[in-house]
Length: 408
Ligand SMILES: [Ca+2]
Image 1 (cartoon, rainbow, N blue to C red):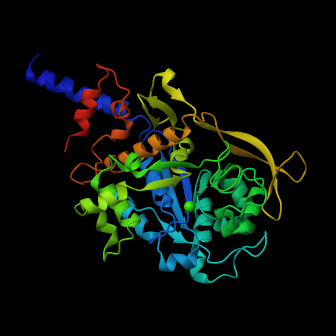
Image 2 (image 1 turned 180 degrees about the vertical axis):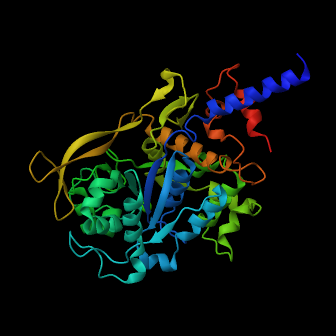
Image 3 (image 1 turned 30 degrees about the vertical axis):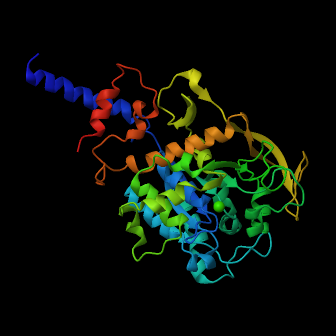
């Protein structure tokens, strides 16, 4: 073969492979999402930093808006700092707004009596729903205040435009236990649980504080397992959060050189988690065994069927929540049907969730940019590559895909 022919074949190969590799790429519709979080800096509980980083990592999810929970506290502990850092790392500019400052006073409270500076959150939810051509999913990992206030203002809009409402909140079984997120705004929780909206309920605990009998998402992980392999920029994002740093230009802190003492400190910690590894489910990803690790791959990526696992699922339940925020499973007129989180493989659940979270954090930086930090619009995104998930067999073109990712 002449040089030109070889070059032509090679170019064809790279282009056709990048198409194959694109998997869920531009041709597939992304899942539009509004994300509501009690993200703070300095933090209360830094699990929220892990969750939002994982959400950013899933490229099939189109984050339309972020709502920062508990407006008054956002003024002193702005969650906008970690958002600006994630936008810096990923080269994105996701819009955010600060939510209501005070608890709702009754179930139908629209929150309109609260100060103007705290109205942007509910406003952004309604505007996003209104202007979206397709229904939007809402994810909540804090209180349900701004969602409930938005629903109370425009119930018909919510019924028409909310696709799925994933709420990480509450206690699955123990009566009298007010879970933390519920306690932030009890009326908002009860309002949404009894709303009849398409709720996907992920209780934080099942059986009381720190308990999980299978209907909650709570698990524990070490930072060594979660962050052992992340890029320097992602490590700096976590150093900034976990060590409560205070710099003049926080958005650019991820670009700094790593301080190895800080890194060791962060890697020695442990973490309680509830949400991060559930997010791939929202994007329709498949969970797979990969050697002694686990991963979640995009819907259209091909995989060996025998490696598929289902660590958890959602099952339909009929639920009524009373004025004390106690949950009653019953088939009555007052009860509403919703989907409840359910662990299917308890023996490996924590291991799967930790492994999937680590994978998302590893991919957070690489997918959008090249190694020297430039936007990688010309480079196929590594997460779509079969090789990236460790599923490739010799001869399926992975070598060429990997070559393509290292192009300038
Ligand atoms: Ca939270």
